[in-house]
Image (cartoon, rainbow, N blue to C red; front, side, top):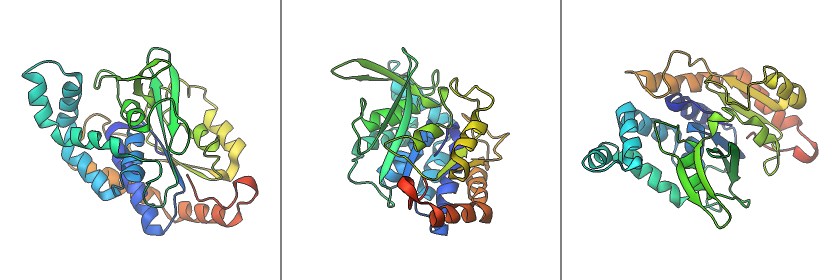
Length: 274
């Protein structure tokens, strides 16, 4: 479970990198906001953690703003100039259309993404292998579109029109989605980048309730990323965030994951973590 956090999402690459190094198999992956983009880049497009981190660092905050201007299409010459500066980001977003549910990577069986429909405030969630009201590429793009910085993503279907924005506005770490069908995960590693809570997370006892309900099946990684930007990236911060993610997957976390894999049984048993 990869949570919201803007450029702090570089830490997700570190977490994935360390899980790979330790030989921990990820059965499924769910992302929200930047976590959704990392999830679909990784599992849907087969881009490894190091390359994901490199592309984010190379893009930088200026290119991010330029991408927002280009996607808004605010006339010439502004859009032309912005499009040129944001070319790498736009090319990466264009590749989202290549995602196919039957061709996931790194052994992952299912990918899910959360977005928010701006007019209604409804959560729109979709995953590979299941019917979805919105195609996953559009859902991933809309789900990472922070208002003001990026335009909403308009999706017209036969039943209605969606205007999708950042799913983190609703839930920054939508753990509930991982335990519910179609994922029904037995073990969830939830990466929390410590951003402002979504409006559906404001109950102060939410994490306590989740931990009581799921016990050892919920492993929460609260990464020490305070002081790093979400829409800005200082010199050297990119590599530092990746290393924070790597360091968070320490021997204690790996032992907990391995114990869960060895002892899980019942309808959710024998399942590697989401």
